[in-house]
Image 1 (cartoon, rainbow, N blue to C red):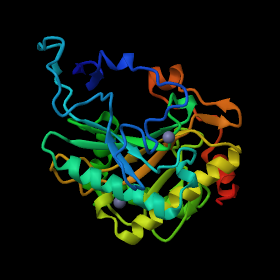
Image 2: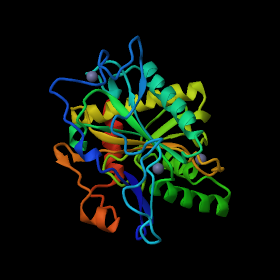
Image 3: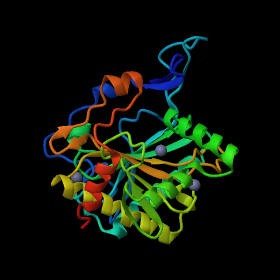
Image 4: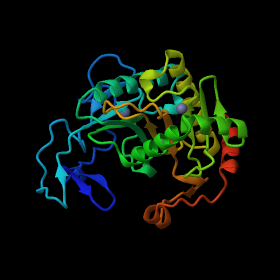
Length: 317
Ligand SMILES: [Zn+2]
Ligand SMILES: [Zn+2]
Ligand SMILES: [Zn+2]
C-alpha cells in the first residue's frame, strides 16, 4: 500500500494491493445496521466509522516498492471514514427529514474540522456513491470521506482557475457564475434563501447539477446554523426531483468541494456540491467513454437548458 507518482499526468495514484480482495458479505447481513458488531450500542441519528478497508491510513505501512527519482512512492497516509446517515436500512438521503439531513451536515462539518486540523491532512474529500450501478454493494444509506495528504488534481484545477480570476478581477469566479446563472434563469433547478441549484452552462453530465451557498464561503464550518438548515432543505429537494423524474431511487455520485485544509489561505474558493448521475435519460446510461476518459473532453448530447427544465418541472416532494 502506497502512493505512486504519475510523472506524466503529474498526480498521485493510491495503490492498495489488499483492497482488491475485500470479502463478500453474507447475504442479508448489513454491517451498518444497529446491532452489528461495527456499530456502537445506544441511540444515534448519524455516525462516522473508520473504513474497514481503507485506501489511506493514519499509520500506513512502508511502500511496497522503492522510490527513485523517476518513480516516486510515499506512504499512503490519510484517513478513510464511512458516514452513516441514519439507523434505517431502507431509507435514502432523499427520504430523511430536513432535521436528519442537517445532522448529516453537522457531522460532515465536525469531521472536516477534526481531520483538517491534522498536520498531514491537506484535503478532506466528502462524497457519496449511491446505487448498485455505481458499484455500491451496501444499500444502507451512507456516504464516505477520504482525508488526503495532498490536494487532489480536480480541486487543484479549480483553485488555479479561481485564483487567476481573483487576481485579475478581484472577484470570486464562483460568485460570478452564480450571479450569471441566476440572471439567465434557464438552467436554475431550484433555490431558497441561502442556496441555489443549477445545471451550469458548462455542465459535464446530463444531470450534473451543482449546489452553491449564495454567500461567499469556502467550507462547511463557515455556514451559519440557519444556512445549514437551508442546505439540508435544498439537498432534499434536489434528491426528490431526481427520484420523481426517474421514478426510481436515483443513483449518483455526489461530492463536496471545499477549500483545502493545508493551513494556507484560499479566499478565492467557494464551497459547492457537484453531482455526477450515470443516466442521460430513463433507462439510458451515460458512459464516460474514450473521448471523455482518453481526451478529457466532455460530449454533452443535449443542452443543459433542456435538462435543467426537466428537473425544474419535476416535483420536489
Ligand atoms: Zn443496514
Ligand atoms: Zn464566491
Ligand atoms: Zn467543483
